[in-house]
Image 1 (cartoon, rainbow, N blue to C red):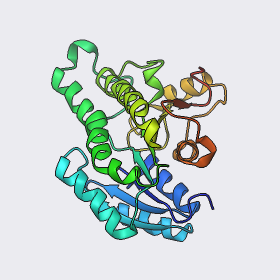
Image 2 (cartoon, one colour):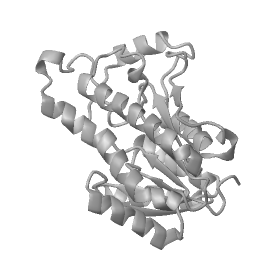
Image 3 (tube, helix red, strand yellow):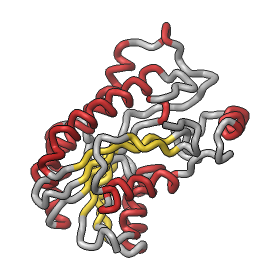
Image 4 (spheres, helix red, strand yellow):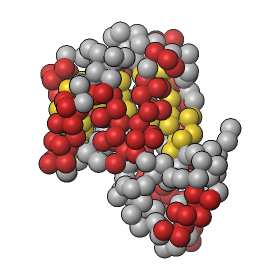
Length: 255
């Protein structure tokens, strides 16, 4: 299998997209560090699913926006598996995707933006700082950051969330330019609305249906739809790709 003997750390992996990503890597033989903030039992179930899928899994708690905890998370991953090959930055600040009750620009405060910057760019910054010395070891490391198709087409203007994710794209490309000569690739996966997840629970069926009608593949993404492209961007099949944003939204955004 593609990831036999390799180790992947997935942040925010106790549910939804992160859990699907963890299981997908494990199905390819990877050892997976399943990071979580507070959902201990759920993360343990994801780690168990990783082991049942043919890889290995361990649940590790950390607030990845805190430098010391990010460093400790990487250290515990190394203690568990002995190496680190792939980092997936999936964790983000909590957000409810409700187009009917979203905050308009006049109602969004600067602290709301800062919360999303911290959850997106801040978390990725801390994790990359902690992980890079180990990703460089084999000169074939990969970082995959989860963003959103709203960075290209804000069909619903979630101002603070979309801006934070757009900043994460910029962060990723700057990092890709620097780390390429060192053998570490950095790419992004940009899903559309993913359902069912906790974040999409507040999105009414009527809006989901309208979005599906505007999507060439006529459905919404499931968490598993996002996991495959993440695995691809970490694999040898994408070894000549870095600094890219891969849109996974059924063709709603075409570039």
